[in-house]
Amino acid sequence: MTDDPDADADREAYEHHRDVSHEIQEACDTVLAAHLGGDRAAITERLRVELASRGHWPQPAPWVEAVVEEIQMGHHYRVSGT
Image (tube, rainbow, N blue to C red):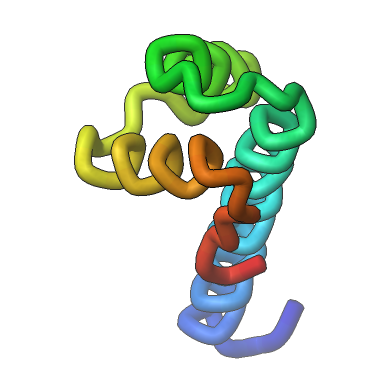
């Protein structure tokens, strides 16, 4: 903590964003590790479950589609801020 309330608020916002990014990354990594193959519906549902269990559902549909597509191809999706 500093004597500058704006600096403290900025730091808190940064730390919150970092923590959320790590939780979302963990959810994406868990889905990839589940080896669901190319089953888009199964990947989407598992991603929904993993994100919801961490308090991060719903997410924007275009983002979900991008993550599912990467996982479907066996690629690691990197969440910004992680």
